[in-house]
Amino acid sequence: MRKTHFFEILVLTLLAFTVGTAQAPTTYALKLGRGLKEFDEYLLKSTYEQRSVTKIYNNDQLLGDTTDIVRVVIAAQCSVARVTIDGQEKEKHLKIRLFQLQTNTDTFDVMTTGAKVRCWFSDTGSVFTVDDVPVADTVAALLSNVVLGEGGAKTGDVLDAKKPVAVGSTWKMNINALKRILGREQVRVMKKLSGTVTFQSIDSTRPLPTAIVTARAEAPKFTMRIDGAPYPLTGSLVAEFRYEVPVDTRFPPVALTTSTTQTYRATQGTQRAESFVTTSRRSEFIR
Image (cartoon, rainbow, N blue to C red; front, side, top):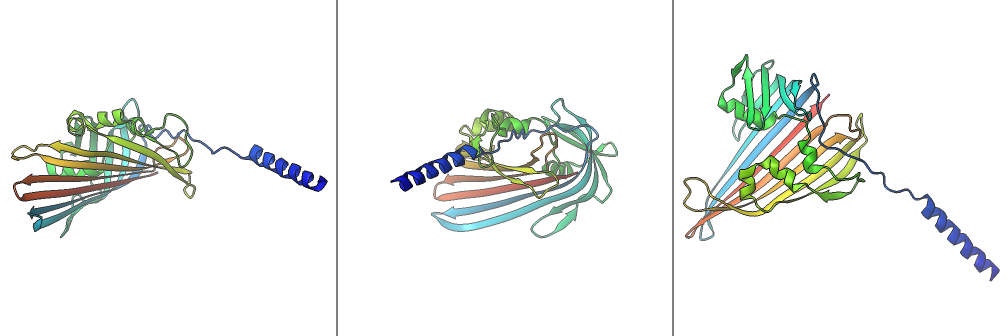
C-alpha cells in the first residue's frame, strides 16, 4: 500500500510539473500593411500569367474550344520617389533589366534593357512615361499587370487579425475593406463575399524570419450582363493570396502572390458557352 501510494504521488507531481512548465504558443502582431518610405530602393521581379479557356456545347456535345495563355515578365530596379500618408507608393522610377510578353507561340521584348520608366499610381489608375512621354496604351496595360503601387495600409485593412496570432491560426477576412478595394461596380455584381486568412508558417532560412500568410476569398455565384450580349452570364470567383513579410514589422514585405479563378456560363436554347479564366501574379521585392 505504501509503495502504491508513493507512485501515485510521484505521477501526480510529474503531471503538475509538466502542466506548469508547458509554454503557451508564441503569438505575433503581423501588421501585413507595411508602409514604404521615399528613397527606398529594391529589385522588383514580377510575373503575371493569364490563361483563358472557352468551350462551346450543343446539347452537351462539345463543338469547339480555345485556350489562350499570356505571360508578362519584368525585372527592374525600383526607386521610390513619393508615398502617400499611409506609406503606399505614389511615384517610383524603374530601370528595366528585362520586360517581356510571352504568348502561346512567341516571346517579345516590350522594352530594352536600361530603359527608364516613371510611374504614378492613384485610385483611378496608373500612368507610365518614358522621357516624359506617356507609353503606348498596350505597353501601359502590360505594365499595369506587373508594376503596382506597393505598400500602404490597404493590405492590412483586409488581412490583419484583430489581435496577435500564433502559427496555424485562422481568422475572417475584413470583407468591408475588401469591398472598398474592389469598387462599387464589382461589389454590386458580387453580392455574396466571404474569406479567411491563415498564418501558415515562419520561414527561418531567410536573413530575417519571415511570416507566410495565406488567404482565400470567394464569391460563389453571381449574375452579370455584358453590353451587346442578349443573355446574362452566371459566374463564380475565387481569389487567393500569399503574403510574405518579416516578423519584425519595421521591415517591408518580401513577396506577394495573388491568383484568381473565374468561371462564366451562358445558355441560349440548346447551346451553352463556358469560360474559365485564371490569373496569377507573383512579385518579389529584393533589397
